[in-house]
Amino acid sequence: MCPIKPGGKFRQKLIFSIEEGTIWWHAHSDWARATVHGPIIIYPQPGTSYPFPKPDAEVPIVLGEWWKSEVKDVYDEFLRTGGTPNNSDAITINGQPGDRFPCSKSDTFKLNVHRGKTYLLRIVNAALNLNLFLSVSKHNLTVVGADSSYSKPVTRDYICISPGQTVDALLHANQEPNDYYMAARAYSSAVGVTFNNATATARIHYKENHTPTKSPSLPYLPPYNDTQAAFDYYRSIKGLPETYPYKVPTNITTHLMNTLSVNTVPCSEGQTCAGPNGTSFASSMNNISFESPNIDILQAYYYHITGVYDKGFPRSPPLVFNFTAEYLPLVLEIPKKRTKVAIIKYGSTVEIVFQGTNLVAGIDHPIHLHGTSFYVVGYGFGNFDKHKDPMTYNLVNPALANTVLVPKNGWAAIRYRAANPGVWFVHCHLERHLSWGMETLFIVTNGKRSDEKLLPPPPDMPRC
Ligand SMILES: [Cu+2]
Image: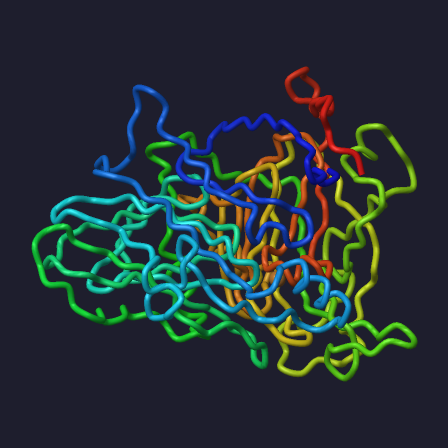
């Protein structure tokens, strides 16, 4: 859809069908989501309860990134040069980098707790370009949900969270009364990619009488590039088949395989570009670097306007090579710039294997689907093997999610039933990759019944 203009308004009706827990709303126009965002909390239906002991209190924890300059200027400069964007100047927890930074000494986020009580942290990663590790000094976190789906409680000493993901975790205030740091910092696996390596903090402050430690110690956080630590965490998150309507598709009608690549394109004539060897960065899915048309695709689809998009998004990689080889020929780096979407029949059962490639630099990609949740049935490193790897799938209790982190030079497989007709964005949630073209659209067709059809546009639908 087109963006809401300054001063304009748009009323959107959201239907939460299976979602419960924490979900994140955010702007999707350029990089406005850096600040235009917030958590949405979905409580258990009246008469039902959490699948874990009711917490004594709940606290949103929104992780973000902050620049000293206008984010729009960072974005414009990034587009103009074709290089990487400036690193953020701060990583924030509820808007503050924490009291280890002089500017945040008095305003650092403090969570006041009572000994013996349990707090439900509703954690959101709203950062533009950073996956994050998060932990709390001397305390574990019991993860009970992610992406607005409850999960099997699992106790961890750190979590990993990508842009777009949410984690519901219980913090048991069971330590000696004192002040303890909650800390977050980057998980960034790509070689040669700079990132903000700061550690953001908040304080867990016990209300009981104590003399607070002047500078509490930082909790353990895995090393910045610890892919193993990130995926140890992700693999430990399982669904709750015994509690919720839970149907992992086993008979797949639509198989998709989708390569995720960082790319380069030659610099336009007369320009200087800041990408590798004077090129401009790009990125792609199945070698298509998505070009946004001037007419929005939702309206083009609804009103049958032709010539706006092409339906031929490849169902499997058009270029087959050793995706995760250490050295790859430069010629493979150049993607095709196209506006191609995939058509998915209503009611089909879909499996998508996202395969990361090592073109330019292998890196993890948090892939987000609009319009549906999906089961994350498998993760692996290296090239996906369609004969062997499906044997390792978890079809018993996979986690439901709406964003999956695809490992650096590895793959992730998801499954779902396409039961939400409409035009749905599929994209990397690292904003720089999205801006470079790592996205496509899935158009889920109408079903036969009247309640299986795309709704008409609301009267206040923004115009371009
Ligand atoms: Cu990405």
